[in-house]
Structure formats: C-alpha cells, structure tokens
Image (cartoon, rainbow, N blue to C red; front, side, top):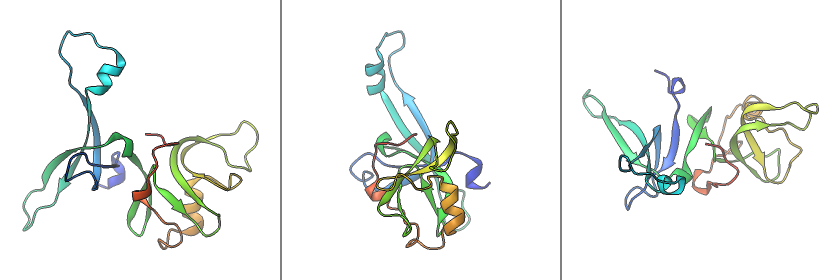
Length: 168
C-alpha cells in the first residue's frame, strides 16, 4: 500500500527519550475521563492524549512491530503528498526557494494566489511566504516548477517548525 493511500502525519514524541525525535504514522486521540462525570471543554482537553501509530521493521523477514508513541500535538503536521529527495513535506515545514526572499511555512486550508480573480479561493496545501506576500502560494505549483530536485532548491527544516498559522 502506498503511503498516500492513508493519512500520514509527523510529530515529535513526548517524554525524556522521545521529545526530540520525529515520528511518522497514523494519528489518533484518546480522551480518558470518568464515565458519568460532567466536564467542561477545558477539563476534557486536559484529559486528551495524542498518539502516532507506526510500523517498526524487523530483521530476517520477521513481521513488523506495530508501535504507538505519545506525541506533542503542537508539532503535529499532515503529509502534503509532495517530497524532496524522497522525504515527505508536512504541514508546518519551513521551506525556501532561491526565487523568493525569505522562507515560508507549509499550511493546509483555503488560500488565494495573487493572480486569482476576486472571490476565487483554492483548498489544499500552500506555502505562507513570510516576506513576499505577492508570490504564488500553491505547493503543487512549486513542486512542478522546481521539480523538487534538490534540498538546496526547496529545503525542509522541520527542527525550526512553527506552531502558528498552521492547520491540522
């Protein structure tokens, strides 16, 4: 099964050993609260836990291990379906191209390109350019134009991930 046939996410783990490690897998949320107890939204949110489930490959043809790790939801990003040198681009990635000054953040949602007619919007993955607001935002445009041939052309920097201006 191709990875694009399911929703692939990436996030950092929680805990002493997992807090700096990025994981890729299925996203799930679990809310543990006592049955029959009424709680407000803030209390329920405190009880929520967020997880990524993934396969860990075994040696010598053994079946894969199915793993689950608790993650920091602030770092959660959905896969865009585009890749650079075989590495997926996710919401929240900071990207660069030599054609535009500064960097941008990959987002998902409703957006407009500068050349669009009034009232025309697109829905999908786009780049929110920080300095140049008059550049094309469509992530697919940059994928086709640049071909994602090298990381120098269109570079991902997940360790500098910002949590603002992102959709989950």
